[in-house]
Amino acid sequence: MQSDLIKRGREELRQVRKRSRALFWTVGLFSAFANLLMLTGPMYMLQVYDRVLGSGSQETLVALSLLVVFLYAVMGILDYTRGRIMGRVGARFQDDLDRRVFDAVVRKSAVAPDSKTNASLADLESVQRTLTSPVLMAAFDLPWTPIFFAAIFVFHSYLGIMALLGGAVLVVIAIANQMLSRGVQARANMAAQHAASMADQIRTEAEMVQAMGMREAAFGRWRKARTVALEGQVRAADVGGTFSSMTKTIRLFLQSAMLGMGAYLVLKNQLTPGAMIAGSILLGRALAPVEMMLNQWPILQRGMVGWSNLTELLGTVAPEGPRTELPKPKAALVAKNLTVVPPGEKQASLKSISFKVEPGQAVGVIGPSGAGKSTLARTLTGVWRPAGGSVRLDGAALEHYGTETLGQHIGYLPQRVSLFDGTIAQNIARLADVPDDAKVVAAAKMAAAHEMILELPDGYDTVVQAGQVRLSGGQMQRIGLARALYDEPVILVLDEPNSNLDNTGSQALNHAIRAMKAAGRSVLIMAHRPAAIQECDTLLVLDGGMRMAFGPKDEVLKGMVKNHQEIQQAPAGSGGVS
Ligand SMILES: Nc1ncnc2c1ncn2[C@@H]1O[C@H](COP(=O)(O)OP(=O)(O)OP(=O)(O)O)[C@@H](O)[C@H]1O
Image 1 (cartoon, protein in one colour):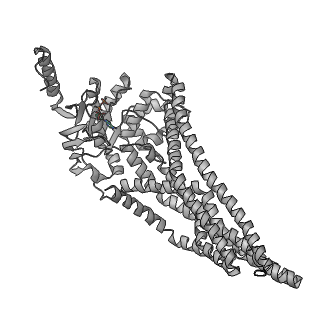
Image 2: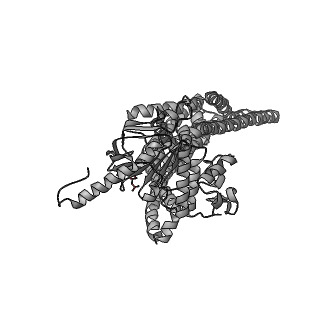
Image 3: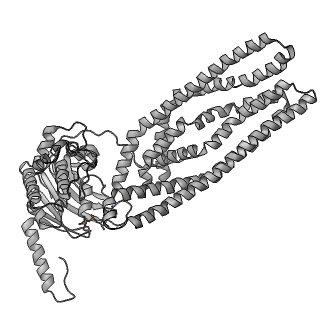
């Protein structure tokens, strides 16, 4: 199953890469010519030493030099152009996948956030960086290495054998480097990611960290993670550095050894001096891609890790196919034998519960902590999928609406409201670049936030989260309510809506609920406090994920009080919840 998902993710990435196939071929073609032109230097040496110096002809030297200038210019243009093409291939790859990866990250994080998913956009960037890095050019040059070796063989078989042996040693070093540094580098990257996400969390909760005197402790924890990351990076750099120094030394030695062997062959009259120099230059060319790959190994390795993480992410979060657009639903919600298991958990938080919400109804969902109220809110808003049973909105299963559309039909006020960088209006309009002013004001009025917003320095255009304005918990909650009410959702799900509201705020909330009911829309309110369920006509009582009661508010409350009294009056050791 897991391997099927990985296969699906890999196939998706391959399809995106395939879109640049023509460009890859072009780069391959340019590389072929650029590599052939790399023979210019050795050929020039050969001609200068063996022909010009022998004949003393200055004209030949000038003619050869002019030709070489031209050939090098062509090679430079080819090399520059293929670099530019690969730059665009990388940018296109990232551009093609930005939306898909962003969606997958949001969808996966909404269900089960983890640091690996958090780093997915960085993974995409690492693949893009690999595509545009010199290491990929080296991969295009690598197939031409045999041609350079063959040319050396043409000069003399001894030189060819020496070059081949040297090349083989470098390849062995490259493989050893790959094998030994892979684990070290991956662990270093993971540790760095962990330290960065810990720092992020501490920064987000800076107020609490400061207020509770947790700075030292937070620093201690972060430093521990940071030290692990640093140690890992040093170890990875040590391994990489060792191999890259070995390669450099061996290559330099090989070039000198080639000259030495060449000189010996010249002395034996088996080789010309030009071939001796040319052979040494050719060896340098032949080994350059191997050396480049070794030096740039961390980039390549990070890119490979990024590729494999993206494979997993895209495999596990399938793309959302197009959905047949359903008409705007009526506010009729039916949950049947609904069972919900939180992601990564084994135990269900909601166990086979059923209830019905009619248009114009306000349903209070009450129960002690951990009863499953927030779980129900997350399920109704489509964030968590039911493990069993179903929830239908106007007859259609929630997943038939598609997440974006469902978000428009079901307004949601979470327990903890957070606002995004942008103006109040953009926040109410759910981050629309150009908010519909009339809808923004209507939503704010319905949430009784209009006057409060007008008192802010720039009214609806006040920028939040940029350090200019700090809003109180109650103000945030009212703006959150306006955001939930934006664009007239048919159902409103409020999770502990008045935890931060003062009297006026609570009254405004009740007013909004009444307005929703009057418009034939419905509201579900998850609550601890009775003030929140004042406007509810129906109650759903949850405990331990089970439905304890469902019905008209007064009946349910009466039943609860009666039950409560019976429990109080029962002799110790008997009775229970009926
Ligand atoms: N993100 C989560 N991952 C795993 N388990 C969760 C998650 N959220 C809630 N749970 C579990 O689901 C159960 C119900 O929690 P839920 O938050 O729905 O209760 P609640 O009634 O909203 O409580 P409260 O009134 O305290 O907010 C709890 O046992 C909790 O441990």
